Length: 224
Image (spheres, rainbow, N blue to C red):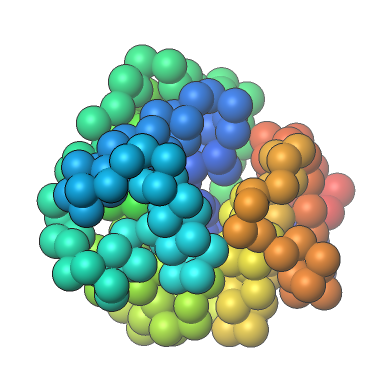
């Protein structure tokens, strides 16, 4: 059975998946996170950056580490670290055309918050395109790749996993996706996220691609 015939629910990560990983947005986020930690935990920037990296690796998100270890208010954190210059993000016309050809529900599943999602979608010309947005707040601030929010999104949106595909630029986020029976597609953005474990994740990856628009073009043309 062809990919497009099998899948009726399309679940996409947002950052570095629906727009280019080299846009510069995440560099801004990382800088703002460091500044937030430095200011709120009263430490110099060098130590703040080390703590930021440590929590990201240990907890899935820096936010989760700050919540668990310091009682940081998540909404305050998310507001502060998403004060971004979104003008540097642009739309990908080819990708958008292929997304519009897909039949079925389209869902965004992100470790970011909904405001960030809406701001990015506006910049990439996909406002009001997605049927649902599942953000970190809806996941009770439990980040990918923990299994619980994957089970939650299935129940919340009444998803049939075997007819669903999930796309993400972080390979280990697709391990639980495969475990709940999603078809998993890794967007290899040409860099290795410092918290990712690509080697250990590979057996859970059904497909990988360097270019999401070309992959979806092949899907739409029945080549996959």
